[in-house]
Length: 84
Image 1 (cartoon, rainbow, N blue to C red):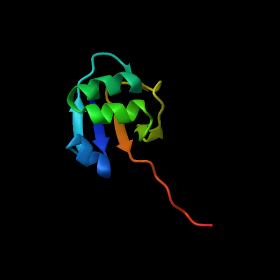
Image 2: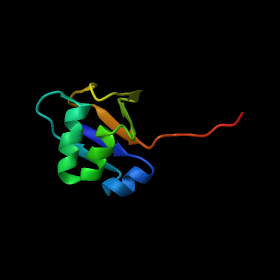
Image 3: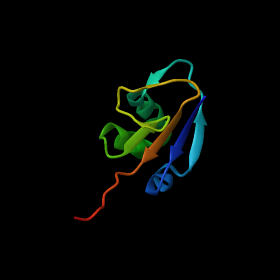
């Protein structure tokens, strides 16, 4: 089972803060986007189009990152800011 966490405005899009998902075998972030698309098409689209940041076990991930049973996947909106 993996834990999916949604932050900031992504909670509204996903209509949840957190969910758990059973996976039988390791999957990539890209494969996870396909699974998410079945229930939340907009989230799947945002993942595929790299419009959000994704971390797996608190480390930044790419679409090729492998997700294993027990992992935590977090979806974060892009951050900006800072001053010069």
